[in-house]
Length: 182
Image (cartoon, rainbow, N blue to C red):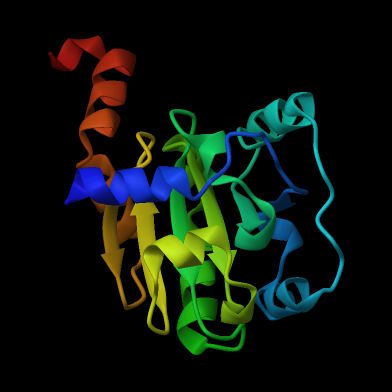
């Protein structure tokens, strides 16, 4: 089942590199997340060099990206993705989840996390088509591109980090950084 889901997930995203303007956690208040989602501005096309710069900027702070403007394939084997989806940007669960992520942004950066949000089901972003949420959902996509966890309720930052820390790729990263634990 995971193989089929991975293949479907991979087939929906073009190989061409596209990235968008990154928003740092401190730059996007919860109330403005909805304003950003409702903007009619067309996404700008970004070169591969700019996409690489986007990944480098992710080391400086937790990135919050709009699902309509990002290609998930750009983050495969580079970053873990926490996806937050809701039917409206005014959903209280959506706002609580974004706040929970912001509260521990440094710890998520340490775990190579990027947050992708989508609170507009009418846009039918490729990520929304793959995850097919019913209302609110929080999902975690590991560096290998597989959806490792999803839940239709708000998770605390601590709980999300505990889930990420159980991933085999994260455990290997910790062993590589701290070889004395072998």
